Image (cartoon, rainbow, N blue to C red):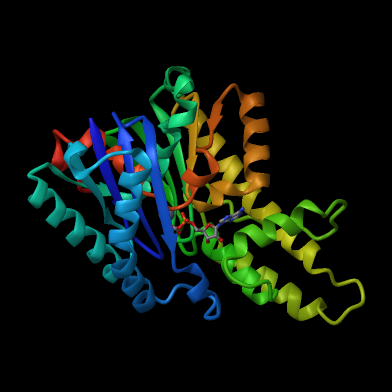
Length: 332
Ligand code: KG4
Ligand code: ZN
């Protein structure tokens, strides 16, 4: 089955073709990110206008890359929620009209759940590894989604059963990255630049606390953000002040809590598979630390390929495959 996926939840416009919920035949992403940079965050009105301009182009390109036409599509899957209202509306209206015109099923997919599903996808050039990947990533699993808008822990029994067991009480980790980068004058988005600066730091004397939220699987990052702000206000005019060291200490605090809480959730639920997703899953310290801790604890930790960590339509088409015959379950 070939599914066309459409993703327009924020500032990326993406279309993808995925075979049987496993192999990515094409995954085209356009972004209005650069236009938002001067504002230090996404401006919803600009994002939705660009969605309208890009949606036809990325869809045509996704078909061309896969060597297919609209006739080859068996179903159309789209991001239903969560996201910016104006941006979501463009994708949903486009996908709904297309499915009507083609007389093919219309599937609505939850964006956060799809971020986790990205772990089960491989690009067509890596198709020979797909059976091994699926054998490795046994369910049930714990899924950790860390992005600009979300920090969520799921217990996943099967692809139609995602149970939310923990989430952020305030900021998402990507949001904290973006806000701390802004305070440090590092621009937007903050994640990639803080990740890069932190890699060059060793022997860091700064330590920021991590919020334990004991007895729950929940997270909190707003206290950390405030601790960073107070530290900067106090020390920024002192000779030893180093942006790189502050960035690295902030990142250590985020990574420490994400790693410990997700490993703890695996033990609590007696689960041996830990799946990560979302933009912050691109973070090199999170990837290295979680893989090392997973190996120590006998837990199989997996991250999607880098392009599939970011917002993309392949993950929507992938999870959409499992919802084709059960459209009601696509609602959360
Ligand atoms: O999943 P995503 O593309 O969009 C949302 O649904 O939010 O995530 C974007 C977020 C941004 O906050 C960005 O700063 C963060 O992911 N990010 C990173 C890295 N790359 C992107 N955070 C930490 N380290 C990275 N390497
Ligand atoms: Zn996302």
